[in-house]
Image (cartoon, rainbow, N blue to C red; front, side, top):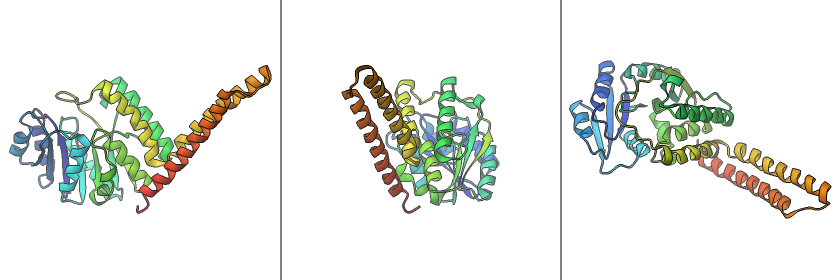
Length: 283
């Protein structure tokens, strides 16, 4: 049961990292715990070492995703469990993740309840992501952005080159697993209130959340995003053409622009679909 590695990305988490590690060893004394210290300015590194975790330190902050990649490369067990350092995740829930992996799944995600979301805004955004991802994949996605997950290391390593260095690694990895045809499951978990200061910045990360929407599409099937958009633009152009033709008896430049734009959007989607297929050609 303890034959797995736990990877914990940590930045300025001295207040909670010790208890997090202690909780893991309490339930899984023979597990491998790897803390990736992402350029912390506090004593996160020393606290983690004192708690008997294997610590890898970045010389400067590279981002949550970069820490995840560093930890995945350093892990020596066949299964990797990723969890946060801020005390939100209960180590006992690792049992549920590992049990699901043993059933034959390749990726198991700890799905948070609505009460476990950090804010109302974040909850609304995550529900939107889940619905969009469910539409794209044809499978129910319960929590696209949860960072508490267990995965088979060999298959996770295949997608390291796709993972961003920032905070959207959960989205990227989940969509990549779906696209590659690997088995993905969700288990319900309870999330504790976060201790310490969040590293999420509303303004900067608001742009990031919008980019996640496009990433969901481009990582799975771009045509599912571009075709509806193309037809929408075409319909607007057609409607405007009908309006100007019946009222003024002419075809306007605006209608021509809309038709051309819809064609360009469709062609971009078609090219993106081919590129996406090449990304997964060996999977």
